[in-house]
Image 1 (tube, rainbow, N blue to C red):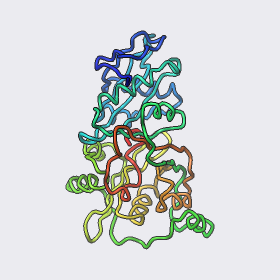
Image 2: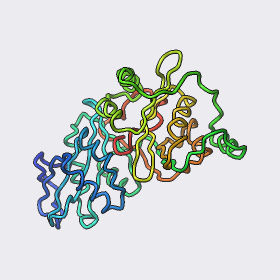
Image 3: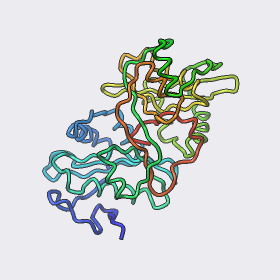
Image 4: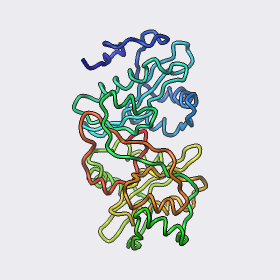
Length: 317
């Protein structure tokens, strides 16, 4: 029988964590921003208050209050993409309550709230993968975070050879211009994104003008054929989402966003695709964290995946 949670947070047939009593899972809001940031710090994550604020405003986030009165014992966030798809992230459990099953309780609650007919995707780390396997998540593809100081301009000969070994053959410079997004562009961006992603991400994309540091489009003779945003964490400028008709447009957008950044850049890329990983490496971004994208309850969104290069965030999939 599948373990699960009742909607009031009471465990249906899982034993309660021994130090947590009978945990009640409650909805989180913007008033919980500091608690979420403190929990992240407890697990040696950066607090990333900007990202948390976006999730608390536009996603469904839940948590368990610590029984010792010291903040939150655990959190999880579900970002809905229409009725049939969602992204899951920010599943965190305070170190002092680790190993007691709270992470599983939170995950099962989020899956129950998503609904049986909803395909839920996430980025799985090595530490989280065993739990996700037990819950029935299936691997879809790999993801690697490329991070570092972006070097603009033509790569040196050694870098070109690295690109060639990685399969990233040089592409001709695309005809068109990169410019900031205007309000009049948003409907076109949403239409392009639904076709590329295969589900409706309006609830997050519509907030990018207020959230992102930069939000750009690439406009060619046929109109807008790519867009990308960059936003800050404590250490990095994250480039995401990045959608483009081909690798040449994607590279142009990344270059415009990264070339003048005062911080290091982070790109979350599929290492098995040729268009960007070798090029990013040649321009100073090194592969670091490796994760696996997994899905539960059905296939991942079915769009034109070749047009998608980076997610909005690994917390939203």
